[in-house]
Length: 435
Image 1 (cartoon, rainbow, N blue to C red):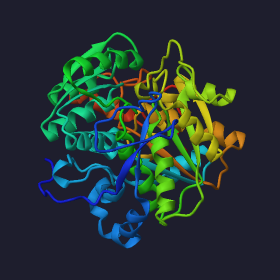
Image 2: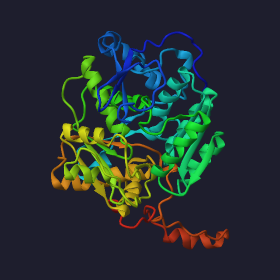
Image 3: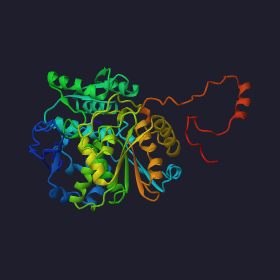
């Protein structure tokens, strides 16, 4: 799907950019990366009174088919002909009673971001970031990515007729590598972690005059991510859940949703109530969890980060202080889960919902039993688990015990069928279905 051809104004109420830590304001009509004062993220600010006059429940109901761009007053792109879209957003929020009952939850729902065009929530951020950058005259892009953001960037630059270079860890999922190459991106595989990839992306940006859209290194990816918060409120008829459980790497999802809730309240669409935001990481890479437990404002880099859930293998996050503030302000918590539990829960969630979720979602789900047992989440609360990406894009779990091929001789089939009984794909440690 190509960029929209209409050259008219979107109605964006973008006002300026604000330093997330310095609170200094900058013009939004110039190309910006991070805050010149301190290198911290910049956040887009809007003329919220003007937006509120247009963003009513009635107008949003009419725009329901417009994907994330139906929130155009609270998005930064000013003219439609600069919008590169593949139909992102408007992902389903569905109840998961079978899964919830096994996890001790009576009101569990899943926000299925894997239904986005590129198979993950990264499509939201890249659609908005690329569109706004194109509007500001940028045609070359670069990013460091664990995988899904790379595919999303190349998809939207292909849509817009721009070019992209991505730097990924050498052990990034093969599906992500393939996606970049097929879409026409320039792929660099680096021995190291995503933080190392970020160090290489900087000189590439400088020497090739490419714009770096690595997580929170520019102001607009987060604007696409905050539409998850807009949709969550709309899906629940303008009430927010009690709890949001979110797998956390760079943290733009948590930060973006929290920003979205404030903007919705200012626009008169929701009240002051907020969900408790729960950040989930892997035990092998948990800088946010460690900082939260220690009461620190910033998160120190996690040395020797290791987890198969590539999207949350982020040893340091530029928006660490924003993530921690969201968790604490909301009354939430941060939890690290065992590596073996991640793949086990990925398979369990998939078998109970029919949605093949990614390992990152498996990590988030793996936190739920402990949260319920500890009382951090109660059975009757309304809980939303975020499925941030498709399992088709994760590396295959090592726990899978694939069946051996059977003979093509029909004479052998009777004995095969006689031995059959329903059982799920055997995965070590997975809870068995009730008979």
